[in-house]
Structures are given as structure tokens and as C-alpha cells.
Length: 348
Image (tube, rainbow, N blue to C red; front, side, top):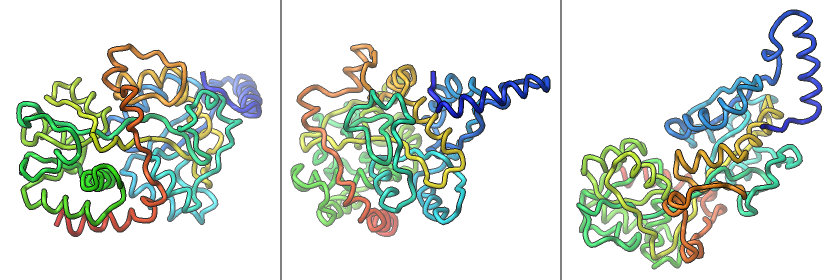
């Protein structure tokens, strides 16, 4: 059950009493509205299935999703920062983009007393300006029928010998450039953009393909148009569940961590409900459901995940030591230049 601020409960009780006296349903007055900025596709659907429908809507909260890629949503956050009231309350972003938006001064420093379930958060998932919702790691994905021998890491993925069997996902340009840097430096450097660009241009010349979305890439893997790439391990699990022939390999160069989380806009019009949404996503049931439905690791303690599933979505103790947090400051500073090169040079 979601925990609300005591004042919200008192206001809700007062509204309920008034509504009952007027002969109208109390539920209509209960919790108000929250606007959630999120990616579309599976993630948006699972937010509705695991958080909004079972926890928030029964309390009378109207949840509206503002679905778009993170780049246009971040641009809108910055564009709206001078407004007294923005158009979105809570935004789903990667850890790198949470950092960037905090540096831009558009998100709230969290009051953790308003998120009771945060007491269960893993320490690494608790940021001053946001919370981690789910996490995974970037691994090599390949089809054993097409790629042999099995790859061992990012360098094997970015080998021009694979030609047009190499695939990229357009929206993953940051993680692709990080992986290319690690491939070029044997895992010593995640931020060597010059070496990353050299490797990527070589595979582009060899015929590597770029797909606009995760879903388009999955279709290409399924019909064996491509056979090797890199993606979050959680995605590999999802696609295996969907019957797509693919395996995951933890790269020898190191495993870049991916954290998907949420922040509250400074000018959120429904800030209390944004906190309620954050609290709901940290409940045990939706955290466990995301592990089953999406293949991501939960960010709170005390979860019950089937051992066979945990083996597929998690990492061995040795691999855990290989998980590498990203350099969020570097990415915030260089993201625009990385995106410009990706769009105007690599994809040209």
C-alpha cells in the first residue's frame, strides 16, 4: 500500500466526508492527478500494469503518462524551468540523465521523509536528486547460429569481420560509444571518444546497421538480419522469453551499469503525488514484477525472485565486481557533442 503524507490523508478524509454528504462518490475526490514522463513501449505498459493500476488508481489517483524519448523530455524540462508550474510531475530517466538534469537545476532535491519505502533502497540507488527504480548491465548479445565462436566482449562485437550482422540501436548512442571506448582501451577507459569513433567508423564501413528502436532491433534479431550487438542484460532476457534466438555474454572489458530511475521536477504541479508515485514504485510487489516482466534487477532489499530467474537477470559475484558505474559528469558535459557526431557523422 502506498504511504501518503498525513496532511494528504486529512485532506482526503475531509473531501470524502464532504463528497458523502453531497451524495457523490468519495473516490473521485481522493488523490488528484500525477503526470509521469516516461519512455513508451514495454516500460510504459509495465508502469501501468505493476504500479499505476494496482496501487495508485484504486486510491483515486489519476495517472497521465507523457510518453516520449528522454531527449525531447529533457529539452522540455529545461524549456519549462522558468515557469511557475511545469507540465510534468515525475520523470523517468537514466542515471546519467538524472545527473544532467540536476546540473541543469530543473529537478527537486528529494525529501526522503516523504518516501517511506526508500528505507529499503540499496545505497547505490539513492541519489540526492532521484531514486533508482531498476538496474542492469550492458552485455554483448549474439545469435550462436550466426556468430561463432562466441564473443568474449565489446572488442569481439565491434569487429568489422561481422559486417552487416552488427546491429546498433539509435537511442543507445551513449552506451555504444562507452562500449567502443572500452573495446579500444581494453576496458581501461570509458571516455576515449576519439578511439571510440575510429572503431565505430570501421564497422560502419563494414556494413553495420542502425535501428531506430529496441523493438525494431528485436525484429531484426528474430529474422536473423543481424546477429551481434550490445544491450542491457534485461533486454536479452525479455527477448529470450519472446523466442528470439540470442545469448548474453558479460564483456571481459567490464560491465557498464545501467540504472533507470525517477526524478521530480522543481515546478511539478502535483508534487505530493509525485512522491506518492515514487513510494509506490519501491513497493515489494511491483519491484518483483519488474524482475519477472522486464528482466531488470530490483533496487530495494528483501525481494523474492525465483533462483532460476535471478540467475538469468543477475550477475555472479565475479561479474558484480566487474560492474562499472558511468562517469555521469563526463556524459553530461559531452552528451550534445556525442549526439551530434552520432547523427551527423556516424548515421550520415
